[in-house]
Amino acid sequence: MTTETAGEPARKPGDATTVLSRSVQRLTAVLRTADARRPRVWDTALTLFWTAAALTDAAGGWRNTAPDPSVPSWLVVTLSLVLALPLYGRRRHPAAVLTVMACAALVSAASGAFLQAAYLQLVPVFHLALTRRPRALLWAFALLVPPLVTGALRFPRGSWDQHVVPILWTYALVALLGIAVRARRDHTAALVDRARRLEIERDQEIRLAAAAERTRIAREMHDIIGHNLSVITGLADGGRYAAVKHPERAGQALEAIGTTSREALTELRRLLGVLRDDDQAAARDPQPTLADLDTLITGVRKAGLPVRLDRHDSPTGRPLTPGAQLTVYRTVQEALTNTLKHAGEGASATVLLDYPPGAVRVEITDTGAPARFPRPSSPPGQGLTGMRERAALYDGTLACGPLPAGGWHVALRLPREDSPS
Image (cartoon, rainbow, N blue to C red; front, side):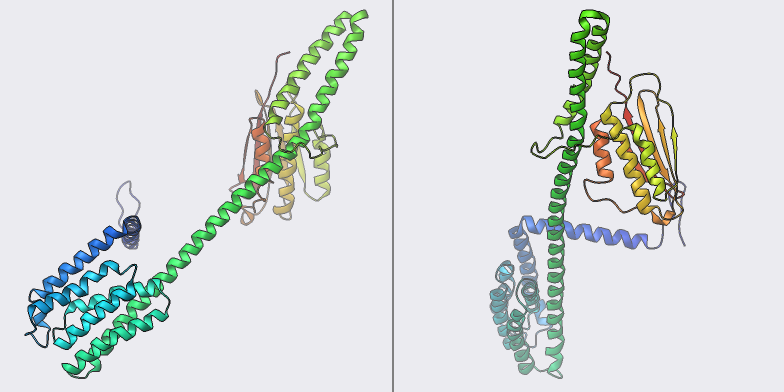
């Protein structure tokens, strides 16, 4: 059954177990953090706790289980301290600690005191399994057996194996626990180390890919700026000759020079932020513009993808800069290429080119089975990352993702820059 109150979701029966498990995990994490930050404080606290417990038992409780209650009190107190105080060094020297405690346990068994503090040997056994090679457990076994056999032979109670085998099983289980914790710790450390290496490699790949993408954009922009400078040169030469016979045309030429130069300076400022390598040869082919969208879509249709282009006329005003037109073109090209790769058979696409106030908007929507989404991401620096780089270069935004009914949607919005003449 589930319980539900107004404004609260129904609680499942397993919620309490989940909350308890998470609480235990958080507590364990806090204890591990405290142990890692202040190990000596933790060692001191544990040693004092078990020393107090051993001395409490030495005050008289040990006689309830001792075969010989006449053991001198000073010997009981001494053995209790020897069995408890070495725990402080269990982390750094577990073998030495176990050796000292095993000697005290042997005296306890031989004298008939049978102190329960001898069970503290489980602690260094755990640390041996946790920090040492498995062969160290053989040495631990050799230390643990003599006290058990001595007590069983000197003070027999029933069969001797009843005093030896159960305790040895306890030691074995603790050793297995230490091995399991060690394996999990090593596995976790390996995963963390691998994740760290992968993160470093991924960051390096992203930086290299981003640098390559920006360099590619810079090469594309090279022809645009070269074109603008060539236009300015031609206008200046024509205006000089026109100034003699047609002064009004000279004024028009100067106005066009000012407009073109402002565009070139704007493109240059953007270019300076992405240039990486001046030695690489710039692309020599002319860069596509919005006028080339029809050719692009025709090629995509020939590849087998039905595409419908809805183009709204640009409002009266200055056209988009060549760089912005290139960004729109590349976005449409990348989106349709992804549709060809991932949408599957029977898919179709729609390209909408619109000019809302102060901006240009292009949306590419395709159809496809919902099971095909999300689509596999492109390598860093390509695909979506490249489109976002281009959009950011012109202060634009790019949004993309799967549609609820199936298909993929890409929306690019770039601000129009109507510079005054």
